[in-house]
Image (cartoon, rainbow, N blue to C red; front, side):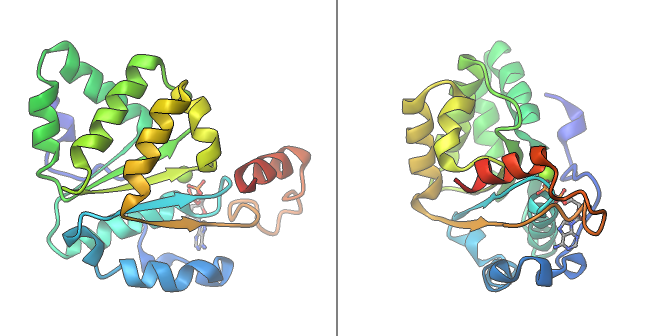
Length: 204
Ligand code: ADP
Ligand code: MG
């Protein structure tokens, strides 16, 4: 078992809901406000944050994690790639079931950046097992710059992706963030063709 995952949520920069400028994402204000109380955790509901780069997905995922921790829930945060690495380590050691059981004792697991890198088939299957093991037991927050329709390409298999999305969204709040990157605000470069393409893709 890798000790570096123990004890702390392992967030990157700590961001809070108070730091979030909802004027940039007015449509998300009410939904995020309702999630901040942590009620979704007691029902083992999930939260999915979708949208183009820089729209605040990681910020909101972190902030909801901080709020959950403040309500006394156990929280872990890592990127999708890190979660797969961790599950693959457990699988190789012949203790995947024990690891999944242990992770179920965390009320909230945050999986940042689904779709940033495509998964190998084995990785996709491991990720599916994480989603299945938590289904109706404990919550996940996932972030992705891809719409659900793009997840088949990430997991290399439409059937695996469909089965996974089915479990994730059965009891979930899906928030779609919109607009230009907050990072690039006011720099006059939010209409670069590469940015537009990403935005179009994420909103298609
Ligand atoms: P994403 O994960 O969607 O790519 P991030 O959450 O990493 O975007 O946001 C990029 C940066 O901009 C971060 O520093 C984040 O705190 C900030 N940011 C994004 N949206 C907002 C917002 N609405 N209010 C305040 N800061 C924001
Ligand atoms: Mg992010």
